[in-house]
Image 1 (cartoon, helix red, strand yellow):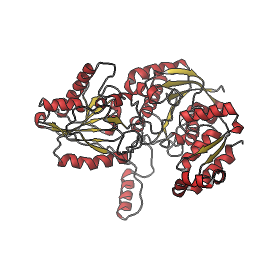
Image 2: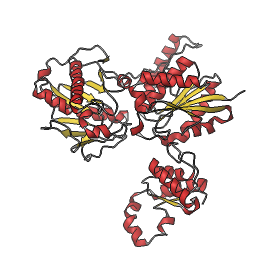
Image 3: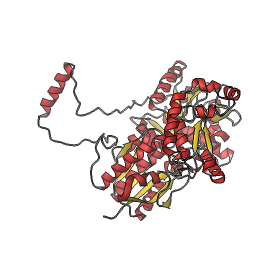
Image 4: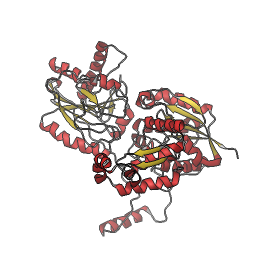
Length: 348
Length: 107
Length: 66
């Protein structure tokens, strides 16, 4: 049997092109393996060969999804691939979304087996888990040594036409319902489960309730001219010097900052603390992430009742869901107490 | 280990000969010390930097290890490292560093 | 609340109900290629769209495009 032709998709960072300042690079194809491809080559062994690596900037993909998807698909098509592997992306949000998106497209358009890997909290997980197989990894590249062998093994299985099993093959549950046969009737099983539950015995649900985590939309603001609007951001805009030392990644805190009397955020007084996007533009003019200048104008013109005196800021780069929920639950209380009517939340 | 430092270590090893280099680390935890040590011996385990797949096999130690402590003037060491020596998990660091060295250091 | 963000699928997946697509990841409410005046006008447009979203009744998740 001839070797499987594998195409690998990675971002600008793992291709050694650079960090955030290179996140806008357009897709390019390189021959053979690049970066982590070397680890995959070892793990895949003799049966497969990485014939090409597609490199694409995370921001390019995130900001131009349709175009990027099409370009990358054409590149993969051109390689006559038997198997497609993306990432692993760990907890890098844009990277995870790109990996998930391109895997889904390759699977649908080219009909070849696809596999990617990322951390459970990566937004790419929830977006794409139903469509493709995603191996669960740790939350940083330090997990590369564990992630690659698991991914390689799973990828080879897929290439052989085998199905991947949870949890043995390390993939995240797809959440797709499958019809199966059972010996006992549903009514019997349900009653057995109920009796177990009532008597405090262990039981296993046949259908775990999905965690939708949705909220009912709030009613619209009736009178904007009287409304108090607050600004909140995950873009990490903080007073220059980052006095609260909000971390560039995996923030453990948020800041509350007084903009009373401030009509415009400037580079000498403010900066971004966020380590997950190219900071150049935000540092030049922080209004590009937190639009204080415009809202101040609107306040003067009477379009809004007022811009709330404080803004809340954290860094949304790899911030744990738990922390994000915790921060907001806390400061929302203050917003409500101070009569804030609506929030404009900006993210990068 | 960040990309710039990986490149610096790579250049230094190329310029001076790997056997003539010792890398001294100051990481605050065993895990990060281990990652950096692995990077300059077996290659960047995250495959993100210039030392990806490059096995320099360098001699590498952490500042709190006895080999470094004993090679330095006691007063100077106390002044520069004494404080950190008290707050770091020295045993864990020594264990991790020893493990990496025994597996990957060539010199 | 209105969420001004670039990668709309992420906002949808985490459950925002009023979403306004932003310009780019490193400058959601700006464009360094424009001159200062034009850029502020662009930012103003986006904020106006956001305020409009806040004043619009919605049943479920809604993306306020173009």
